[in-house]
Image (cartoon, rainbow, N blue to C red; front, side, top):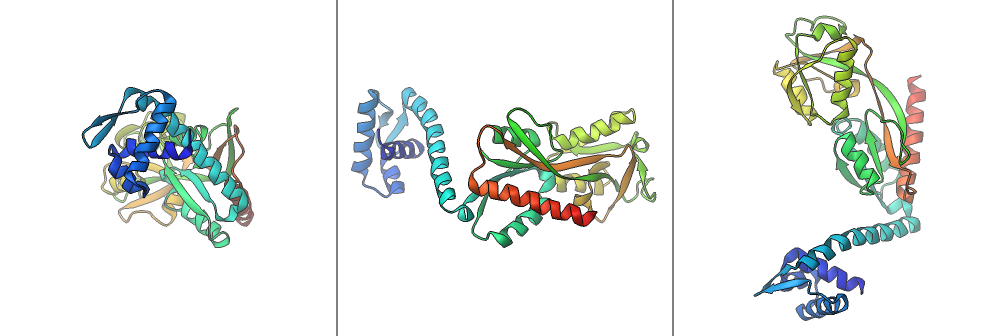
Length: 301
């Protein structure tokens, strides 16, 4: 079984048409047909059903495709890893991040990194903390920013870079909008705008409310930070958001106030798998992050 045969098979399965697959592969149709026939002969089973000019995967073909895709992903990773070892400063970083870090934290650190390593590319994956941890555990990505940072496990390692306060975001006409600070219990009668179920940012707010003996009344849910801020600006509820998100981007129709009871903070950092070593390019980025936030934290002190 040759790698070429596998690539031809996957392209035909994708296009469901030998001629189209050959066009995409920049080879003759006869070459594709010949290699597919050799592959079927070696496996001892038909992989495709011929329907005129089109083809469809047989059940055996579907089973083979499912497993061979995983194998090809590993081969691609192996080739990328070798290339990284040859030149780690020209590789690609597969990086995950949540919505709450997309507007300020992530762009700043990527900008600082690219000033030193201009040839390194990024492949971004956005999702909830839970989704990002699963992507790291499954090997789909190697490193993910998360907030709040979860507990370390036997398979997943963590690194906290900094902590920040959560602030209450209120509509400008809210009865408490003129105060200098807010006790979270003062919002017991308000409706809340929160992240959807499954997002750790939602859990953080709910647990803070529970500390002062109430369950927040959730009026609206979203996974988009701009939507959440927009709903608050429209007077449809209140929320708690990290100070970095609100420092330069508080909507005009809102006010943000520090929460003094209880003190609500979130940690920001990364998760990575312990089951395998980080590829050279990702490892270089990880150590850059450690140095970058060490310098920033020293400046804050």
